Amino acid sequence: MIRDFYDIDLSGRNSFHVRQRAARLVEFETTDDLTAFFRKGAPAKWTVLAGGNNILFTQDFDGVLLTPRAASIDVVAETPDAVAETPDAVAVRAEAGVEWDDLVAWAVERDLWGIENLSLIPGKVGAAPVQNIGAYGAEAKDAIESVEMFCTDTCNTLILSREHCAFGYRESVFKHALRGRVVITAVTFRLSRRPRPDLGYGDLLRETEARGGATLRNIREAVCAIRRSKLPDTAVLGNAGSFFKNPVVEAAVAERLRTDYPALPLYPAAKGRMKLAAGWLIEQAGMKGHREGCVGVHDRQALVLVNYGGATGSEVLALAHKVQEAVRAKFGVEIAAEVNVL
Ligand SMILES: Cc1cc2nc3c(=O)[nH]c(=O)nc-3n(C[C@H](O)[C@H](O)[C@H](O)COP(=O)(O)OP(=O)(O)OC[C@H]3O[C@@H](n4cnc5c(N)ncnc54)[C@H](O)[C@@H]3O)c2cc1C
Image (cartoon, rainbow, N blue to C red; front, side):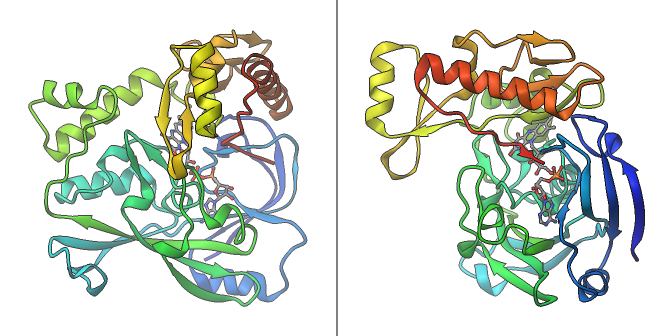
């Protein structure tokens, strides 16, 4: 069923809580709804607005926003053919409108391993493949089997296997070649009945042991506790989590920076390159805790830009540019936005 809204206030539909409006917003449930919508001809301007936790509206949106509502979770196969070599695998299909953390809680309750490190990431399941959400050493791509998508040109539904999603660090084909051409309607995950604790990141091992050891529930609780202690609650302070991605640079650039700044944190990345910690760069550039009117760089987490109340999207964007400029001036490094700016 389609629910149509015209000239709608978006402040309750984006985690920055900026007060922009959309000319039209369509909530849909089924692919039949999407077919009915796109058969009439695609609107000149449209995009998907799911939970709005990774979008910054800098102006009113003069097109159509599509919001998925379908929210069922089903076990579709135990030891599916595609993963027959891993007999403990369970394939779980979740529709795009499922709240991501509800899926994690569902899996943990059923003793299914694979997405517990991604506990408490806000947003919907359909958005998870778009930027290949990641946290605490895990990424959605590690558990995604395939992605179902509605192609808006043909009104067909296609299933894309993980190998064809071009997943990378906060990257996928959905941000590039398929951007604006598909709507993700469901995602199938390959979870595991066999324990697969991955506690190598940050404080996770300590926090899990403090709860009695590496059970699924303890890991989930530990991740939730760490996240709550480090990230501002969007219900209290508008934000979109990390505003910037960690920059990935050539090894020679990283070495040169390390010579100048011996404390610079460096992590190996794909193709022999190195990942720098954007939060550290921002802090060293003097921007952590920096505030301008209603917007600021969070004082405990320099990657997070916040709306202290009443900020416009353009004010947030102006601050983002200032932070990028400060990092560029001090280190000669570009930090790109992770948040989708509209
Ligand atoms: C407090 C906080 C903490 C966060 N922590 C993390 C973190 O640890 N790791 C991490 O990776 N991210 C994190 N994020 C970012 C955010 O949670 C993720 O990007 C999440 O996947 C966004 O989901 P959403 O439903 O809100 O998507 P939206 O913000 O609505 O959309 C994000 C993008 O995906 C597209 N999109 C969404 N759904 C679909 C669909 N069905 N089909 C096609 N395109 C679609 C949208 O058009 C948009 O371009 C955090 C955000 C906040 C606010």
